[in-house]
Image (cartoon, rainbow, N blue to C red; front, top):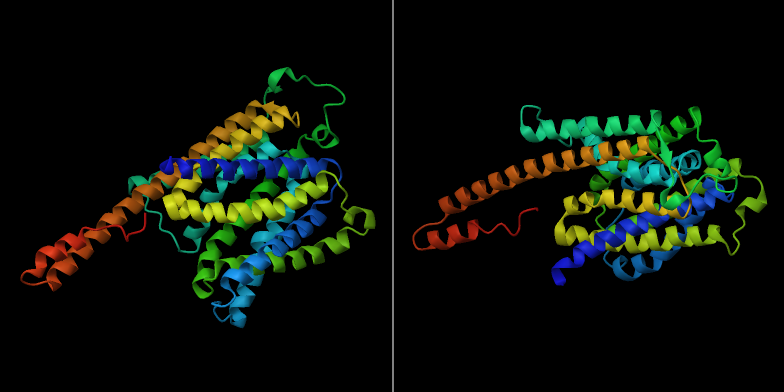
Length: 364
């Protein structure tokens, strides 16, 4: 039972994200402004995380320099504020299924940006390098199929098209609007992937993860307010009643930011980041099924083919990464073994050799 906990955890994480896509789409469908939504979401997250950050990390917090603060401000603007604002506009133009499908491009886009910034190597003469390149091409193909091809459509469980089934946004899903939404979703994911790439460098200079996350949510809430103010001048659009809008804000601010932050950290600690990334397609399956049943969104052949290509590309890149990482681990073990055996002498050699074969401290 203990060994199955990471599997239950990743299932819960992906279910939480699937609900986020569905609730966000439902809130936008009833007229919530996406810029207002981002502000409330980030403000709620900051309020939720601030007491936890102060309690657990305030006493041992490292000193923050001005350049570090500027870097945090930049990644908050690019990776959170702009990413969520663009995502909200894209979700209005498309649907929850596309939002879930494009999350599978995140590891691929992140790897591509890391290659451009010389943080990753792409060795085309190796099998792992070819697998990663193939994965990137498959993801591009999947995104193109989502954008330019729809094909035959159907509704699950015998839901047929009728006048009250089709929402205004769905009725306008045609041609330019849908393509615009697809590309905006990819831009949003690119901003988020850039945040992932730069986040690693920020953590090295400011290792208090909870305080760092809280500060980013706080800065993002201010940035999103400054962006929303000139676009949303109607006071009624800022009001939250006891409806799906309030539920969505509370859910995204407390559950998505709070619960998934802890769960994902725990999963990475137990099984590693690759294990978490491999669970991303669950998000697409859950979102597609629930959106078709609850929101009555149309499932098209193009979305199915595009989803398969995106998932195939994701697994191809992850396989190449894991293969490459396995080779590096063996090389590190060999170097460690050689260096420690040379240093040992006499009766200590056997003990040194035994210690050198212990790989528990190596990254998995």
